[in-house]
Length: 183
Image (cartoon, rainbow, N blue to C red; front, side, top):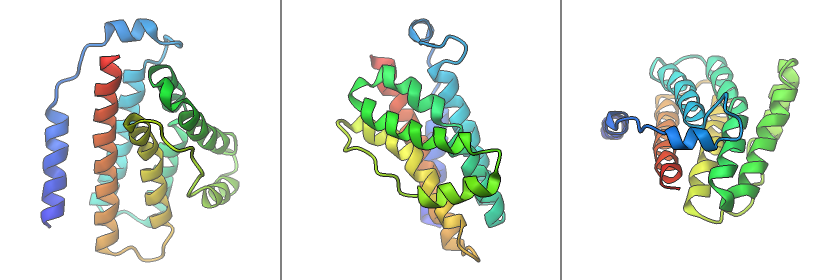
């Protein structure tokens, strides 16, 4: 219970931080229609859906569907971060490749699920900086939750563990927002 309260406290603290205006950053973006800030917001929105499902102790299938959506929608974020974090280019490209391949298979849900099962622990290059680690966790945390949701009969501890992983993802997003705003 203390971990849950601590996690909620962290989420409240992170969400209390004001949004930063990023007019200079949006002008630098390669694709003006979707900014890095919008991609961070999209990731967070999907991550909140996963957290809500965990809080409601949704079925394993519902958790798999939500985490699959979060994972497969992260491609643009990883590709866009390459311009902001050149030291992480190899890692970000590898993560984008994992999620892009999954998106290409998305018409056939069963094939997609089989592919995710194979790629639950993708081989990623060694990270060159802390920012690369933060970015990797944005893929690895949802993959871990997806793997957890494949179990039959999720226990209370499983839901708690998954919530902590999502809280970690929110913290990683905030770190990356700070890092990319400094550049």
